[in-house]
Length: 263
Length: 355
Image (cartoon, rainbow over all chains, first blue to last red):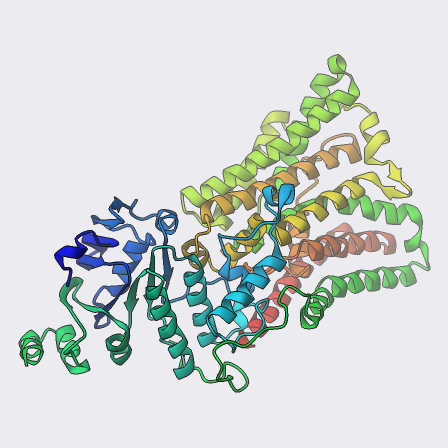
């Protein structure tokens, strides 16, 4: 819960709405995220989670509402505005170019240029991008991916997911949003991602995490936001919650949830 | 969703940090990989061109290899090489440009008209230079038009460029009233179009240099990499922060500019325009790009491969002429080559998906 002491959160999202034709995917998207806080968004399939974070990240233009970062309203529907403001996102489909290398994907749109005139002419420094990508992998403790010049499309689903997380980590200045970052991961890689989430929080960033893996959520989240039918319907602390109580919140069986939360 | 993945590598080591051998050093496997890419496309095509030439040499009892014939092949290839290099950008970005042949014709007409108009007052030299610049600009404008239509109106590039193909040829005919522009200064041929530099046709040399620069742009610049990213996954590239629309317009402008320069080369060769002489030019360029290793599905493109593959159709045509095959069959041959090229691309694509 937002206490008065944290009255100006890092991210404040209010009244986001988004329809696709007849379908109201997002009816009431409200969220506040503080610095050094991991907020998990949970909900059943079709609850509007991905639409919600896509609107925050600028990948979708919401029909109504506002997104405020550090007290400044963001231009809605602009990926570049969100990126410039320091929001980095790991999308569920990872947003990769399969034909490009891992290093090129990590630096896609933030390419490292050569020095001097060559750089001003747009020449990229392949060597520096490979070196920095490899260093990033080391930093995150990713040992299963040794060749950063391999095409992203040649990687396994898990490796690709780790690369997407690494890319977001390297770009996030204020807030990192992760949509199902552990969906295709084995136990060891999942742990790397959870450790990364912890270390992002330690660095003072805000973290928004969408996950179906409720044990993970209860482990890493400082707050759990529950969505149902396009609305944020609950915002609870994970302490005292169990997978069962969260599921009942997700499904709308609120009386059961309140009961168990009170007990 | 991908199933839980456990085959991400040989037995993951427990330590969180494993020192990596200095990452900036060129690693042996990277060299091998590059070499392999080189081997699998560009040099295979080069071998095919040499093999074709050998076949025709045998069939013509050596006549095929005479210098005049080879220079003529080179002159035929110059404009085609530029078109193919430009098309590699468009295809790499996941689009197609059917209008490059028409753009070539329109640019040649603009170039010729300007040159003829200026020659009496400004002198042949300056008139030709200004004419060339105007031709290239006309090509760039056609490319810009294509790019804007594709990105602003969200119309499929196949349809857009099919339309602008008609517009380009039509405009060329309107400007000239249907008859080819004559009266160009003869120095345009003597000094450049049919002139050589150490036996190498000058237009081919120019096309080679410009295309080589284009190859560098595609492989080593932000624009080039983002163009391929766009072709590889437009949605992915957009959300990774690539300005997809600007990049898309850019690749069409590159293709148009190259076609514009090819249009200028065209008038230097014949000393006149060839409005109705480019019906198969676009097909030839398209098959060269695809044979050269550029994917029709976007994401992968090789300007170098396209440059080499340009010679497939020009050698084929020159050979046919020498062994006396009618020009009607030449068109069939170009069509067949294009279809085979696309088929090979499909096979490559299927293999890439499997691995």
